[in-house]
Length: 216
Image: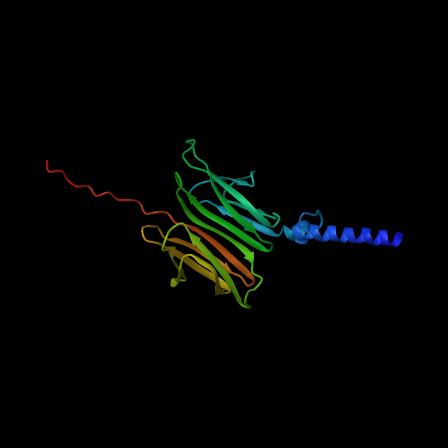
């Protein structure tokens, strides 16, 4: 009788643990353990804001001003808030970007922040590709403009948006263009076994109003 009770208890424990691991993956537990989480902290986040400084908050915690290079955050998805510094309160709006930090990778935000909702720049981060091809990586690219065209090393690649597009491993000069928007230029590195996620923000061209001389 005692053996049956022991077997029943063991079976209940196994079912309980299996159910827990089904909803909470083991990988998600290990990366928060004090000793083992060092293997999940080999991430880097670089943030630059040309022609100005911005205060940086990551998930509500302050991390100083740009430019900044933040290392050893635990792999995962983060909410990055950038608020451009200005002597005039309220002149620049804070902007929020969602970025994934993947172990053994560097995520980047290079963003020019203008008045109101004006943005010009790029957000780059990697996610793992479990079904990739040897010698190739993938890119996914979205923009805030319609009918944008993508060029790599001055050669036309494809129209945006693109999703999980296979590319040879290597470094590329990328340009994104769209009618009535300023060109967006940046460098990318395509890595085997990873998807490079690119979010491009293009700034509209300034509007020129033609002055018509009066008859008088």
